[in-house]
Length: 213
Ligand code: ADP
Image 1 (spheres, rainbow, N blue to C red):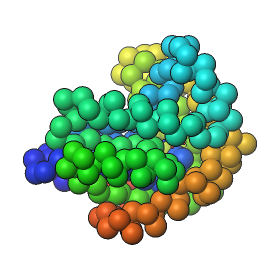
Image 2 (image 1 turned 45 degrees about the vertical axis):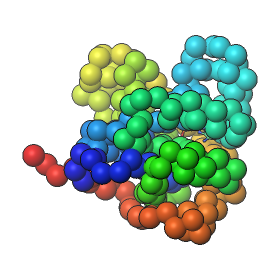
Image 3 (image 1 turned 180 degrees about the horizontal axis):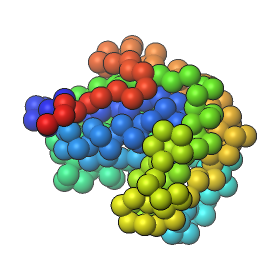
């Protein structure tokens, strides 16, 4: 893919927890030069800050459930109104319910932004083992996998040396709950995308977006 220059586009990265939405979003951001909007990262920032929103959602995120749609819709609406989103953006973890998809559809139509869906398909058993070995840098957000992409020095970020953390919601019982939420609330959106004629691409693990220079 080349740097994005046509009409404004919303790239919707869609897939179960642990399918690699965050990893692919970082690669796409570099290729397309579009901002990456992750509702999960936004919520975790509130939780880390311990502000009102963080206090309200902390227990819900920790339990692997979805936070109220109103809150997430407002966060996204405000974020995509910022000037760096004029040429488009990459959505990671949003929309996740039919109600969120309908809100987004209206926002995109009002702004003349065309959606495209990238559906990351990964086997659930692979997801459970992958998330057990996922580590993240709390400072720069870089993701590591103990099995396939470990840090050079065990437990420490290659980029800034911070001690890596495992997300609280990556514990296996919580991952199972997140997968259940995905099956019930989120996966049915594939029908909505298809009914709404959103261009959609199915990809397996480790797609390569950028041609090597
Ligand atoms: P993953 O896709 O791996 O579950 P995310 O970082 O996208 O990870 O989300 C982590 C958690 O944040 C979710 O389990 C949920 O509690 C909350 N969350 C993120 N995005 C949304 C959303 N669009 N609607 C409701 N809850 C959300």
